[in-house]
Image 1: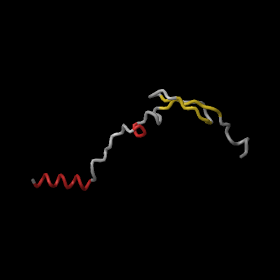
Image 2: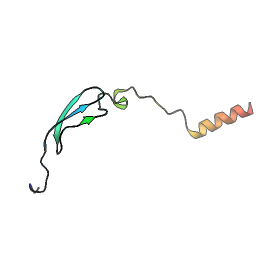
Image 3: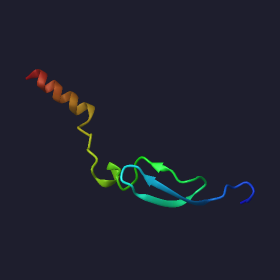
Image 4: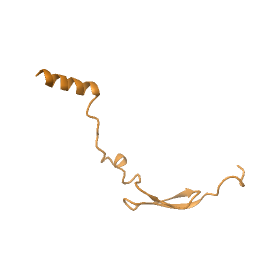
Length: 69
């Protein structure tokens, strides 16, 4: 790597605005504020709801069965 072209990596601190978790990593920019981190994101914590209620065909067949009843 050419040191005159590559940006300098420095220690940066990122803070989650939802839960306050502080993450320290190397970055080319200064530390920033994050909206959501892996500690409070619903998909990572298991609090996410499942929105899969069936396929289109299953929903169509249920409506068709109700219409014929």
